[in-house]
Image (cartoon, rainbow, N blue to C red; front, side, top):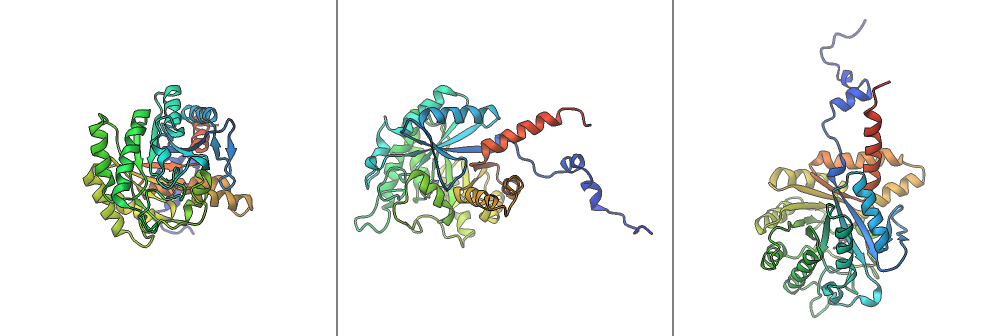
Length: 338
Ligand code: PBG
């Protein structure tokens, strides 16, 4: 005897076609910003803790950007990996208009004028100590206001090199307003600011710090990045950044902070981005290598969950690969069902 049920939720799960039809969340190539590393050597060098990711040469960077644009990606974020000899405590190399970062931005913009280039605004790729700014005289903390001044110079330099969006990732107080005023004064009033508004002091940044060489000794950024315990404080950071002129706000990391993404989505009125960071990427690869997780399904579920939580934009090292597979599956689906 069949049960007498009015609702059988399984009706809408019976086939892939009907599951797709009623899906509440979908991912597409234009959701992503693709982070890429560049160094000043003639060949790309793989980042050990991030399978599939390399420190690119200028020419392999262009190839990566072309491949990403070819599968529908609209934006890349470029991170420079400087030779140690160029780094100093003040991060002076950040202000070299002929430095690696401005050259990389200009090269990508000239090869692919339609691809958006996002430039991080922080000093960690340039400082010998790996912190995001300038240290106080006792060396134990970051000096907020002198760091903000330096970040303003860097943001303007990036805009001059052709960056379409600047993304302060340093977490100093008041930097969004200051950078907005500096960009406006230099004639860049139409360059948007993507603020790393709620950036947590996370263990998940480890592989990134290997990649850009910002971690010679373990360092704590807990006096400027947020305590992982706090969500209401994230809303305060977001509100401050919005008031100061942020055009997009970001939560970082993404997967371990889905509740923060959701809360920010409900409170902010600007688009919300989330950064699936290096450690999130590395742990999926590591578990898959051990045979403990299915790589594709875990990857896809991680991205879908970030979007479902409320992210309008996702920064992820999976972007190009995932968008490539999407474009193939769309091709397949456009054939009549067999
Ligand atoms: C620093 C910066 C970091 C990341 C992006 N910008 C690391 C840090 O705060 O030390 C991490 C990204 C990742 O882990 O993928 N300005």
